[in-house]
Structure formats: C-alpha cells, structure tokens
Length: 408
Image (cartoon, rainbow, N blue to C red; front, side, top):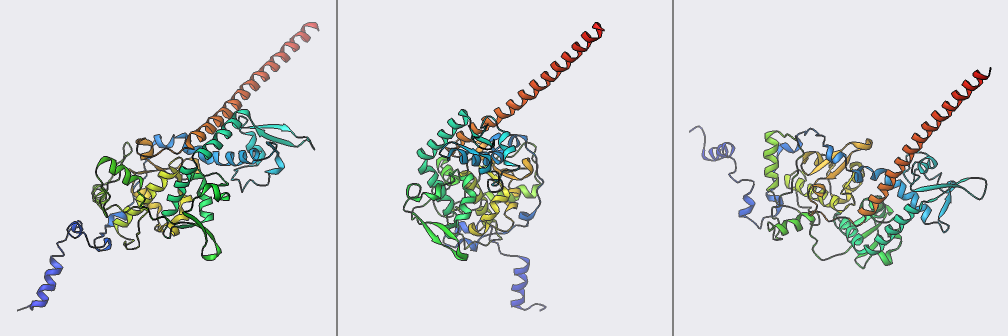
C-alpha cells in the first residue's frame, strides 16, 4: 500500500483536525482555563472609528480636563489661613498644577470662581474665592468627610486589580483625580485608610501601597449579572457584557460573528488570578475588557484620557497595545477626540443609570462646571457692554461735531 498505518493516521489527523469545539471546556469543567482558550485572527482587524455626538457633548466629561487645574488652584487658595494668596505663590507652579497657560491669565478666565484684588504690598494681584465658589468648596469638604468609606473602597478595588495587589504611590497619585480622592488623601493614612492597607518598599526604591484582603470582591459586571439572574458566582462562568452600539455603527460580518463568540466566553474577574491565561487568547482579551470596564466604573465621570491609563499596563497585566481593546469593542467604549486628546468613555454609565453606582463627588464637580459656565456668561456680558459703550461714545462725538459745525 502507498501509506502504512501510522502514516494513514497522521494524514487523517491533518485532514480531520480535532473535533473539539471552542466550548468543549463545558464538558471538562476541571480543566484549567489555558487548556481551552481559543484564538481568532479577527482580534487584530481594524475597526473604523464612528463619531457619536451624544458622548462628545457630555459636559462633565469634557470640562473635566479644564476643571482639574481649577480645583488645584482653588485648593491652594482655600488651604491658605487667610483664604487668599498673591499671584507669586502659584505663578511658577503652572506645570505642577497642569495649568495650560500663564497662571494669572488662567485665573482671570473664571471670575465666577476667582476674585482678583490688589494686595497690601507692592500692588501685586491677589486672588480669593468668590462666595459661590467658597460655598461649593465647603460642600466638597463635607462630601470627602461623609463618603470617606466609599472613597476608601474605590482605592482598595483599584489596588486589588493589580497583579501583586500593590501599586506605586506615584501611580495612585496620578489617578487620584479620576478616583475622586482629595490631593492629601494619602497624607493622612490614620483617618483615610484601614488595617487592610500597608505601605511597602517596591523594586527600584519606589514606595507603594498594598492591600491584604481575603474577601471575594465582585466586579460591577458580576453584581449586575447576579441581579438579572444570569450569574450564580461560580468559577469560569460566561457573562455577556452589556452592549450599547452607536447609531449608524456598521461592523463587518466576520467581526460580528467573532463578537458573538467572544460574549459566550467565560468571564474572568479583574480581581482574580490571571497568570495561567494565554495572553494571545480571546479569553485573555475578555479579561482585559472586563478590567477596563471595572476601572472606568470606579472613576468619577466613568471616563479617562486614554494616555493616562498606559501607566497601568505593567502593574495590571495589560497588553502592550491595550488601547486597541477600546477600538475593538465600540459598543462598550466610546473614544472621544475632543480637547485635542483621546478620552475613553464607558457607554453603560450613560445609557443605563442603574447599572453603575454614581460617584459621590460627581454632583460637586457639576457645580464647579456651572460656575465655569457663569464665567463665560460674565465675559459675554462684558463684551456686549463694551460694544454698547463704544457706540455711545462714537455717537456722542458725532453729535459734538455737528454742534461745532452749526456754531461756525
């Protein structure tokens, strides 16, 4: 015969590959996840960005970039014993406070928040908070005081998503704005942190904050799935992500098919061990998407500048091209290109209000945004009054000219 028996078996294996399906793990629940992770080439397919005016118009997201330096300057003033500061106190700290222009000019852009007056010495410009801004500042301090436990839990979850359950302090400080933590939160560990936190020395001489917790933490996706009765809390259960496709979004058929199969894969919580997963597999991709979903659900506006999340790659086990996860799942995330940056937005937070817990600081930030809007109104009124005054002066000059002509 042309083929001997062993060769026939080899040929048969080539012509008829394994009959196991991608869901064969359901028949073998004791197998570790890496034995059934499947790969698809469609993961690397480019998906065209689709503009969505709804997410581009959410003011609390897109004003956040400007609001951050406003709050930083506001804190410099409110923390001063006299409640006012000379411009010299902050004029050289523009980069540190992330002010996009000269500090004095920036302060003058918001007269409804910062009030300028002449100081007691050398006629320098001084600044204090307006009564309206001072009232919002007091409310903000009350929120920090009343919601300390909520803020502590958000920080704890943020750290528990890391590989070693520890993060460098500089990473945490860089994400404090998104988590809604006050600037001095880590400077007062006795009142802000509980016994599960501990400061540690990390590699490269970095100081870090670790969390030791034996209790199981459920993600937002898991809690919502339990409420709907589609998840019982078992290991490697499949949970489908809630999808909110933008109007007019069109995906190629093979991408749609891949996304359907992707939804049926087991859900790996961002708080679970993941070292056994093949980083090139779709189940690893689902773990990354779940982590990004949980991360944004903890943030005040449920959004973040995409570039600010890149510092988390090493510590949270994210792939080198983690930004592509946002692009491959346009029904979960929206990438806004406003403000000359790319902002990742969690769609679910703005399409299903009951799904994501509202951050206690969001209401306060919206009040600051209202004051920013009032500043724009003040400038508009000033321009109108200035034009009216110019016309009045011009008219008066013409009338004076006519009277002189008649006299002569």
